[in-house]
Length: 379
Image 1 (spheres, helix red, strand yellow):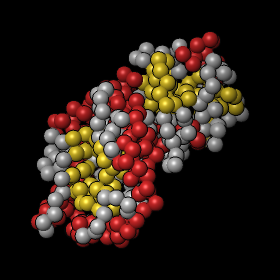
Image 2 (image 1 turned 120 degrees about the horizontal axis):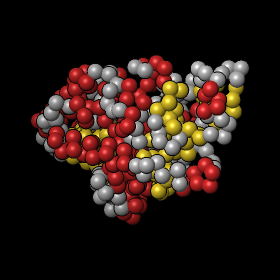
Image 3 (image 1 turned 90 degrees about the vertical axis):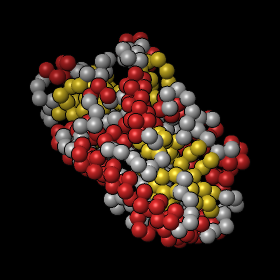
Image 4 (image 1 turned 60 degrees about the vertical axis):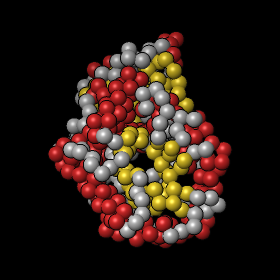
């Protein structure tokens, strides 16, 4: 490797690595699929948290975005990479001054989300300007959102307010992550479509407009049979992919764009384990891949230079230590103290949120070619 790994392989680890060729291929796949379905693509910034990655998501240009935090919206707006932004987490009154500042300073269209008449009332009372709002519908995940048949009541609360303007409906079919069967994922996509289309139809039937009908997750984007009645789809992890999605058959090893560079800092021969400097904070403690690939534990190792998979996994994750059992003593020779390895994460969204200040961007041969800043936090 060149860049941070030149000069005898010296690197301060852990570092977040991003394979540019894989990112570009994954983004093209997402865009192509959205186009085939006849809907707009609104990539989710919560996974990438990088202006440069958002640019790649739109094929090198600008375009709409989904965010989870106001900080994400502020960074995107200031960059000029997105002027149409959906804050997908339920809005609260304390965020309105920051939302209004985006419109004043950057001309940003920031769309908010609510799922209750009560929150709509709180936002209306606190608003210092007009805000566009979507009604969040529960399409089966049972996280946030109202049942489709109750969306009309929320829409009426928005429509009858002074400072809120109804912009449509949205849902997130996160329960698509619970299946490794593509037909079942397609069923979830249909649940998303039916839930939002029926809610939008009821709202329109009551004389209100719903110009935006927004659905999405990366798996449902890939496997939706059709999206009649939907205007846009959101996806985030599909830009990077991860072991959890690979275990469900949504991608292959050669699609994994994100990994963590780590140093072997010790050999624990008593437990036949390598000790890494990538632990729970660097990798996260998400074990979602284990549902369909039980041996994955907290991540799978790859060769530092090529990224080729190694038959080793991070079995224990302490705050700053990762423990990797090895089956043979020869692994201690193959990966001596000081050696570098990559760790491919279970859940790219959480691993990337581990406090890294930047991505070390790799070309197709594993050479470091750029450093792309990324953000974290809420404020």
